Length: 264
Image (cartoon, rainbow, N blue to C red; front, side, top):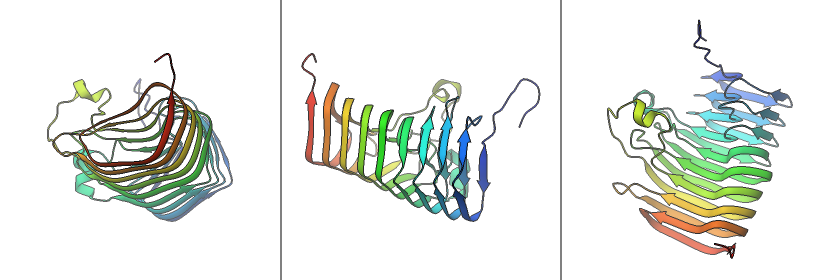
């Protein structure tokens, strides 16, 4: 991957432009970077995996510009995001013009991770038709459901569903952030500005024992987030705040229940 002192860390398992991929019934420990990366693949099943990696950037599984995948009955214990949907970065992804789409994640256990389900932040080719259901986070994750982009990404995020999920401890149950640039914010200038369209985000039947916040939605005023629906969400203890939303249109709630700690 590199010479001298660059020390670039490779993905452990990387499929590039493959079809009909089957990953079934094995264990992975301490990959050097992303653990499983499915890049521009068409069709596949990932099941019965036991994945643990707690180094830097140790995502569990990254599906990038791939389509028609099922991820089921897996356990993820990660130092970064657990299940991640991506679609390339900026100009390179605009050139490839390949959305990540039609992916189901079900019956998985996420022991630790920065997110249970992360969308982005590399998503310039577009992400749509993602459905996570019947998953659990019995210990702790930072964010349960996190959509992230910035003003350089462009692309779109649409038709994303999370249903029937139980968690113990999280910071934010649900978050959308349209200004995630990490270290690149000051290192690299903005050469071309494109705003991400975010529309049709659904969260239903989710319970959590404790959280810092129920949701925080930070849209972009130039292209607000649209059609966000939250239904039957319960958080037993909220430590910081319940709900914040900026630049969001058609935000609907039904039976969103939480108890804010009295000391707040």
